[in-house]
Every structure is written in C-alpha cells, then in structure tokens.
Image (cartoon, rainbow, N blue to C red; front, side, top):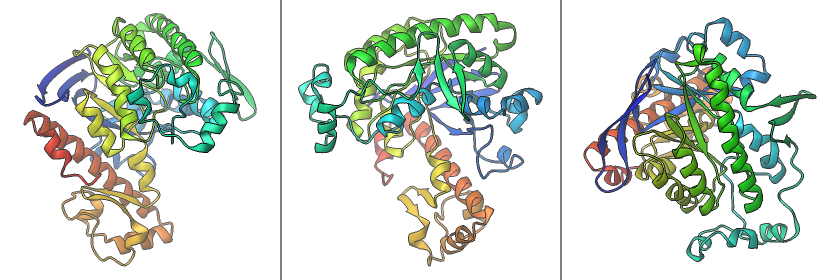
Length: 415
C-alpha cells in the first residue's frame, strides 16, 4: 500500500521530488502538513476545507485523547470522515507533549529554542567550528554553570511511559497507548512514541532518552502488529532523536534506518539560527535511506523549508501558517506582513494570490477593521491566505527541483 517513488532530484543538492502512495491518494513531496490540532483547522469551517489546497494535515494525538475528541472521531469512522477531508492525514505520537509539558516548560523553551548554551557537557561533542555557531548569552551561560538541566521535569518519565497531569488527573501515555489512539484516529501516517528532549539537556540524558525512544519503537511496532487487522492501512514512521549532539544523531539515524518502517521523522527541539537546523539535518539525513520519505517534525519557517528541502527533507508540519494568521501576520513572496502596519492600505495583500481574500479584493485596511471587530471573517481570510501561500510555495519548490533551479527559486523569496 505505502510506496515512495523518487521522481526527480536537483543536481546541485539533495533536494528531491517524490510520490508517496497512501489509502487517500498520492502525496507529492516536498509538502507541508497543515496542523489540525483537535481534528480541525482553526477558523476554517468544515464545509470550506475541501475547497482549500490542503493536501496534507496532521492531528495532535495527545489533545484529541485528553479532550475526548477521540470518541467523536471514532463515531464518525475516522478523522477523514470527521473532518470531511479526502486527502492524506497524519497523527503525531504525543512525544512532543513529553517535551512541551516537561523539560520545555521547565526550561522555558518551545519547539524552536532561542539558544543552545555552550557548556562543557556540550563542547565535548560539538566540534570547534560547530561551537562557533552556537548562540550564547551571559544569562544562559551563568545558568548552565549553576543549574542541572536534567532535573525538575514536571513529568514522570519511565521505561513504561510518561505520566502527565491534565485537569488535575494523572494519565499515563505509553507506546502501546499511543498506537491505540492513533489507530482510532485513523490517519494514513502515524508516528512512533518518542521522547523529544530539550536542547539544554546534557549529552548523558539525551543519550538515555534516545535509547529509550529506540526501545519504545520496538514496542510501537509490536503494538501495531497486534492491531494489524484494523491498522494495516496506516504507515508507522520512526522518529530520529539525539538532540544537538552529532554523535547521537548519527547513532539514532543509523538505528532507525535498519527498522522495518516506511518512513522517518526527524524530531527534537531545534534552534533559531539557520546553522543549528542545518547541522541537525546534516548529521542525520546521510544515514537515512534514500528510498523512504523523511519528515522534519514541527518546522515550517520559509527559510527552514528551503534548508530542509536542499538537504533531502520531504515532509514538514508546522502551526506557523495558521497560528500567525490569527495574529494578523500574512505571508507573501516578498516577506511577512503585519496587517496592523498596513491598516490604511487599500490594496490586497498579494495581487498574485488566488486565495478567497485576495480574489475577493479584501484590502488590508478592511482586513484590519475586521480584526479590530473580532469578526470571524478576519481569521478566516488570513488563514486561507497563508494556506494558499504555503501550498503555492511547496508547488513551486517541486517544479524548481525538477528544473534544477531550487536555489534560484529561493532567491526570489524575501525570507
């Protein structure tokens, strides 16, 4: 059922165009997955979704589970029916919440960290040239020297799984439970349960978490085999971890490459500088097989998409397009636009855009007024615009790769 075929390669880098066959059609890559956290894309009515250029979306396993949306999805016969969505869908593993509600919360860091502290524990595993790229501030350096970043995790992580506190109740998410939930969601692609670490964790802790992630994959594969009668139409992707440590990324990538899975995720909390994201990909992708797709989890800035595609990434997912739309930030080829700064401009955001907002001649002044009134149309217009921008971006990337002109295309975008 799941077959990945390479259709073209850019002769100047690792970029490639592929086609991944799924139960819900052929997915052309590179592609970005839009985020439907709770089984819907915020601000988009379900009857409008089929009309948008959304070829791939991802559902958050943890949220649909703890917020009891899973029961509704099951009652409708799976996420595709629940959303009235005909294309390819993914479900994550819940592993990112292990980070965001754990060390991420304790360290004050999100998916994209603002810095990687350069400390003795890190310097042993980062080359001199790499360390020069590491972002550092006096405040963080002071904390690195005095704090133990491997303690004070709000979550309890054990070999069995991860214990969360949600609505004052203790809940346990295990590899088996993650597989069960994802099987009930019914997405075409699901991910193995993993521990996403913080960039502030030591090499020793990151190694321990990585090895646990490897063992959890074995349990996910076993659990999936027990559900094979109902989940055979779902592809299970393994996730490479290893933090910001070159040796660990290599170990994890080589281990995952040996597993009988149809694709791979590249996980972890990453940095904000281009070099940090590039390094992680350069340390990982050479050890993953060319004949299987690679998904860079939680990344979607325009510059990072180009960096990832150039290094051989096939799939991405990110909340940026829809989340920033709700905060009045629009994407155009010339760069991002904050609608607040254009509240007197009587022009559409992008004359070349075919989204419903631009095609209907809704000006930035009108859009800003709608936002000020908290009119639902404002959130809808901004969201469909950003979806259209990213859909067009990925389409242009695929075309450029076929023509060996990806680098030239990148120069035309103001990011």
